[in-house]
Length: 138
Ligand SMILES: [Cu+2]
Image 1 (cartoon, protein in one colour):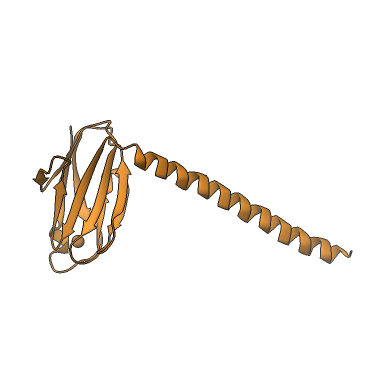
Image 2 (tube, rainbow, N blue to C red):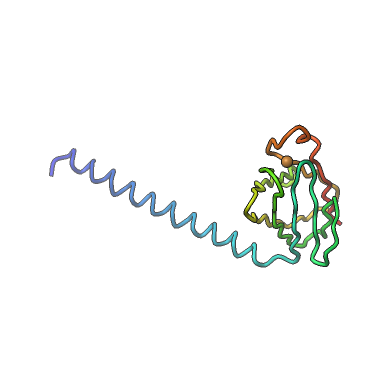
């Protein structure tokens, strides 16, 4: 084989190994997220509509604010009643789209008690900027 052929095959095999590595590493990361999602302490349904958030707790209580306990793993089931919204908790670096016709899940474990802001991060109409809710971590 000529030198050029070695470089060619080196590139092909090198790329194949690199892609395989990235694929396997991604698969492990995604499985970890999914495993984490199943171990939630509380599951809360979140309903998004123009232009408000509603949180429905396991006992059926409905609230305009999200109240959780520090150290508890919270699983949010995100449901939209109209258009696409996006649940955004800036302080935790969390964002998940809320899409009509499907239930998206967002799992997180707040550690620091306090009050945080939940915003809509997907332009959803004239009241979009007022689509705010309070997250209270006790
Ligand atoms: Cu919205």
